[in-house]
Length: 404
Image 1: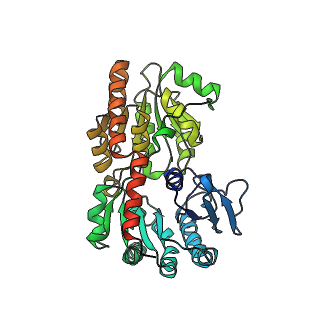
Image 2: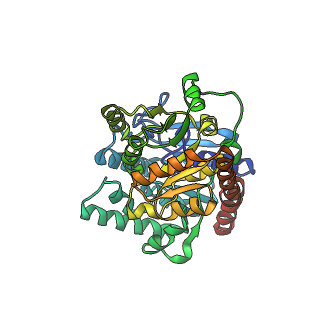
Image 3: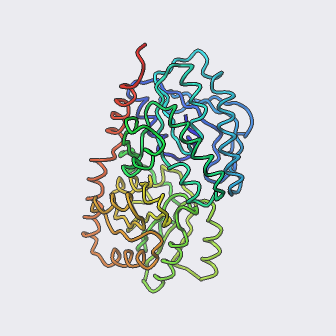
């Protein structure tokens, strides 16, 4: 059960395929795709139920939801609530006649777990929550909710959801302590995000526009890929680009979209940043071709305590790509990059530090940059490779599944 699924681009898409290929029957219960642009994808409508088939015979059951629209707290709240409400209304009926040993909730947002609770009781299934964001702290840190009463209600809701779960999977070791405030310690298991290693280095036909290929191949390009939102501290990226204008043939390339995209575009034009390139969005299948041509890969988050607990999923994707990483992060994400030996780390929202890291990477010989990338790739294979992590997930779910 997940609010986000294919054709939206999330790591869960690959994980579902891996589980199905191991001979297990998988049903995905989700909503209508609308992330990150805010409009429902072509071929879908906000209203109505929909049944599809995904790779390897996976059945997708889709319920209505209100799309995110143009962003903001109200739109996001309505988006979250609409999926939870539709799920509570429809998933039980859609699941009629089906037996489930386990229900795995991709808990981003945590409200996506609400429809799973009655389904768990009805099907006598093991309920596992895979926590991607700390609740309610992430609501406050991103600025979507500031009201203390609403944050208290969100905390109460989180405690109630955790109480109904049999297993709580946390994507970061640092998540343990804050989650323990709301859930029994014995139910918490570290289960990191993973990446399909074969997809991360995919070859095949090059899907990139010739203009982008020429840009990447004729310059030293440091690349940020993913959501361009408030949490990613895009202001730091723009400020760092401004400090690097003197660095000849060096470009900062932003691939993706999000709520801060127009702000970045306006600042780029206002400051005349020719070295800052907004490349637009590309499908996941195109990312290995982009990563391969990049000199380095950037990951950044805001300087908020909540983000020090998390490991952004792009860290695993960058490690898998075997390219140097520049991390403007605090806490657990910074620890992973430093421990892997894959690149450089500076504090979150430190534009001067980010610019220094980019200069240092630019000054390296190509063989030195290759060494960083290879070190990150080796760390990824040991800790985050999806085949190994799929086996571990199945062990966790099987251990908790009721006897039939």
